Length: 171
Image 1 (tube, rainbow, N blue to C red):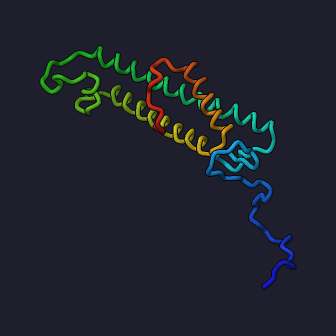
Image 2: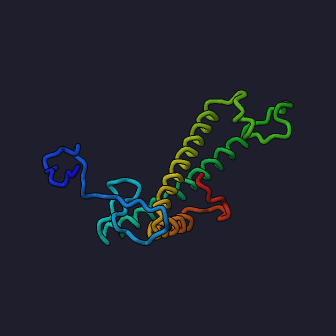
Image 3: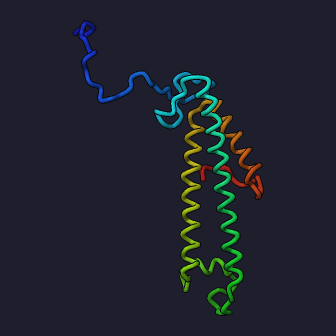
């Protein structure tokens, strides 16, 4: 059956933009033709959108280091607070860090519960953020990968006050 003579111009395609096609690469490439970064609306259509997108990717990645550093500072402040609390001298906490005893749930006060919730929120943000960066990297586009690496370097220079040997796993 030959349908080449049928007129499809009057068909409703549900508001789909048939002009914005996204190219999904599964192999490393430097080609930016029809490149979409994570979302269909983040479509690279010119050199200018590529440059703006690369700067955005670098800033997003640098922001991850800012979140990690904020988390580390909060963790250090909460540990300092835990160490200022009096030790009751009981056998329950013998040989354990006073801070870890606070998080065990036994007698944990409102402040300690709040600290635990804030730390959990920091952790959740870091996990989400790291997987988002992984998706950026998984465009398999060399330009985007390079922007991720530049952003990580800039973020470490700007915010990283700890060892650079920390794992760079997804989370």
